[in-house]
View 1 (tube, rainbow, N blue to C red):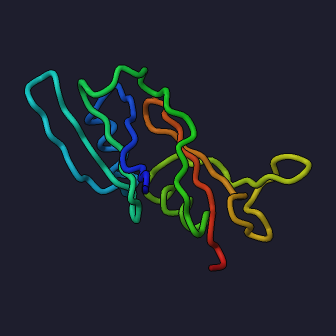
View 2: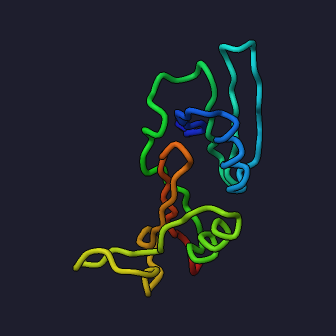
Length: 136
Protein backbone atom coordinates (compact mmCIF):
# COMPACT_ATOMS: atom_id res chain seq x y z
CA UNK A 1 0.00 0.00 0.00
CA UNK A 2 1.39 3.39 -1.00
CA UNK A 3 0.76 6.39 1.27
CA UNK A 4 1.51 9.41 -0.88
CA UNK A 5 1.74 12.86 0.63
CA UNK A 6 0.02 15.10 -1.87
CA UNK A 7 -1.18 18.21 -0.04
CA UNK A 8 0.10 20.35 2.83
CA UNK A 9 -2.15 23.01 4.39
CA UNK A 10 -0.55 26.36 5.19
CA UNK A 11 -2.24 28.83 7.51
CA UNK A 12 -2.03 32.36 6.14
CA UNK A 13 -3.61 35.68 7.11
CA UNK A 14 -4.00 37.13 3.60
CA UNK A 15 -4.82 34.69 0.81
CA UNK A 16 -4.01 37.03 -2.08
CA UNK A 17 -0.67 38.07 -0.55
CA UNK A 18 0.25 34.41 -0.01
CA UNK A 19 -0.81 33.50 -3.55
CA UNK A 20 1.37 36.30 -4.98
CA UNK A 21 4.34 35.18 -2.86
CA UNK A 22 4.18 31.53 -3.91
CA UNK A 23 3.66 32.41 -7.57
CA UNK A 24 6.70 34.70 -7.28
CA UNK A 25 8.59 31.69 -5.85
CA UNK A 26 7.72 29.76 -9.01
CA UNK A 27 4.97 27.53 -7.66
CA UNK A 28 2.35 26.74 -10.30
CA UNK A 29 -1.26 27.65 -9.61
CA UNK A 30 -3.53 24.59 -9.71
CA UNK A 31 -6.75 25.87 -8.10
CA UNK A 32 -8.23 29.17 -6.93
CA UNK A 33 -11.85 28.51 -6.00
CA UNK A 34 -14.24 30.42 -3.77
CA UNK A 35 -17.73 29.53 -2.60
CA UNK A 36 -19.07 32.72 -1.13
CA UNK A 37 -17.16 34.77 1.44
CA UNK A 38 -16.67 31.91 3.92
CA UNK A 39 -14.66 29.49 1.76
CA UNK A 40 -11.74 29.83 -0.63
CA UNK A 41 -9.07 27.33 -1.54
CA UNK A 42 -5.86 28.12 -3.39
CA UNK A 43 -3.58 25.23 -4.36
CA UNK A 44 -0.11 25.61 -5.83
CA UNK A 45 2.62 23.09 -6.66
CA UNK A 46 6.39 23.62 -6.55
CA UNK A 47 8.12 22.87 -9.88
CA UNK A 48 8.68 19.12 -10.26
CA UNK A 49 6.83 18.20 -7.05
CA UNK A 50 4.15 15.56 -6.57
CA UNK A 51 3.02 17.38 -3.41
CA UNK A 52 1.15 20.68 -3.41
CA UNK A 53 0.37 23.34 -0.84
CA UNK A 54 -3.01 24.84 -0.17
CA UNK A 55 -4.29 27.77 1.84
CA UNK A 56 -7.41 29.84 1.89
CA UNK A 57 -10.45 30.76 3.93
CA UNK A 58 -12.35 28.18 5.96
CA UNK A 59 -9.87 25.33 5.50
CA UNK A 60 -7.77 25.39 8.69
CA UNK A 61 -7.93 26.93 12.14
CA UNK A 62 -4.14 26.84 12.63
CA UNK A 63 -2.46 30.15 13.40
CA UNK A 64 -1.04 31.97 10.35
CA UNK A 65 2.70 31.39 10.11
CA UNK A 66 2.72 28.33 12.38
CA UNK A 67 4.09 25.80 9.86
CA UNK A 68 7.83 25.33 10.31
CA UNK A 69 10.56 23.66 8.30
CA UNK A 70 8.74 22.27 5.28
CA UNK A 71 11.53 20.91 3.05
CA UNK A 72 11.96 21.52 -0.65
CA UNK A 73 14.53 19.01 -1.91
CA UNK A 74 16.69 20.24 -4.80
CA UNK A 75 19.57 18.74 -6.78
CA UNK A 76 21.67 21.93 -6.77
CA UNK A 77 21.21 24.13 -3.73
CA UNK A 78 23.32 26.98 -5.09
CA UNK A 79 21.26 27.17 -8.30
CA UNK A 80 17.96 26.80 -6.41
CA UNK A 81 18.87 29.56 -3.94
CA UNK A 82 20.04 31.83 -6.77
CA UNK A 83 16.77 31.31 -8.64
CA UNK A 84 14.67 32.21 -5.60
CA UNK A 85 16.80 35.27 -4.84
CA UNK A 86 16.50 36.35 -8.49
CA UNK A 87 12.72 36.04 -8.13
CA UNK A 88 12.91 38.49 -5.20
CA UNK A 89 12.75 36.13 -2.21
CA UNK A 90 14.85 36.66 0.90
CA UNK A 91 16.70 33.34 1.24
CA UNK A 92 19.23 32.73 4.00
CA UNK A 93 22.81 31.74 3.31
CA UNK A 94 23.61 28.15 2.42
CA UNK A 95 25.08 26.15 5.28
CA UNK A 96 25.96 22.56 6.09
CA UNK A 97 26.41 20.48 9.21
CA UNK A 98 29.75 19.12 10.42
CA UNK A 99 30.77 17.34 13.59
CA UNK A 100 31.61 20.82 14.94
CA UNK A 101 28.22 22.30 14.05
CA UNK A 102 26.94 24.52 11.24
CA UNK A 103 29.43 25.81 8.68
CA UNK A 104 28.76 28.36 5.91
CA UNK A 105 28.45 27.15 2.33
CA UNK A 106 27.34 23.88 0.77
CA UNK A 107 28.80 20.59 1.96
CA UNK A 108 32.19 20.38 0.16
CA UNK A 109 31.52 16.71 -0.71
CA UNK A 110 27.94 17.59 -1.72
CA UNK A 111 26.66 14.70 0.39
CA UNK A 112 22.94 14.09 0.20
CA UNK A 113 20.78 15.82 2.81
CA UNK A 114 23.59 17.98 4.25
CA UNK A 115 23.28 21.41 2.58
CA UNK A 116 20.49 23.79 3.57
CA UNK A 117 19.10 27.29 3.04
CA UNK A 118 15.94 28.76 4.56
CA UNK A 119 13.23 31.26 3.68
CA UNK A 120 9.79 32.23 4.95
CA UNK A 121 6.52 33.35 3.44
CA UNK A 122 4.97 36.70 4.46
CA UNK A 123 3.20 35.08 7.44
CA UNK A 124 6.33 33.35 8.73
CA UNK A 125 5.70 29.79 7.54
CA UNK A 126 9.25 28.55 7.05
CA UNK A 127 10.80 26.52 4.26
CA UNK A 128 14.11 24.68 4.03
CA UNK A 129 15.93 24.00 0.80
CA UNK A 130 17.83 20.73 1.14
CA UNK A 131 20.21 19.29 -1.43
CA UNK A 132 20.00 15.67 -2.59
CA UNK A 133 21.35 14.05 -5.75
CA UNK A 134 23.90 16.72 -6.72
CA UNK A 135 26.24 14.30 -8.50
CA UNK A 136 23.62 11.86 -9.78
